[in-house]
Amino acid sequence: MTLNAFQLEMTKALQTTEILKTRLSFLHQENRLISYHVPPGEKSEGGENEGERIRSGIAITLSRNLFEITHKAGYQKPKPRQFLQPPSVYKKKPTHEIEEEKLKS
Image (cartoon, rainbow, N blue to C red; front, side):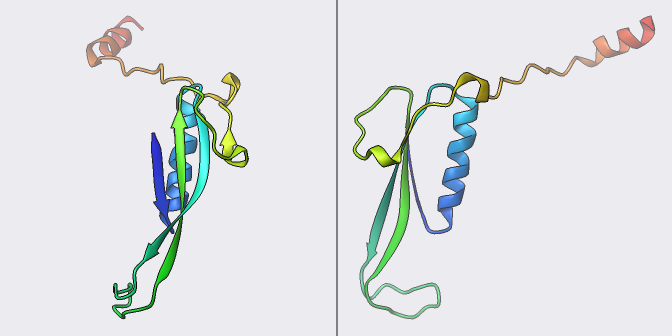
């Protein structure tokens, strides 16, 4: 799975990645910086035409299998088991079971 994000969405992509890595085991991660060239003539947020601009972003690739790593600096190995969050084991009891427990006590 690859997440691509530009500008303000980069923090959301990084937070999403960290949540996924704490919930799912054995995820290899590679981070790469990417850029997008905005051609001249497109209107900016202010509504005015500007020259060519470059938007910076990040591409985050997650995989359960070890994949071909293009840049060693952006690679993160999977988190150890002790840092994984266990699945939720708390299940809500049906109301009739709760009422039976109240009657017994």
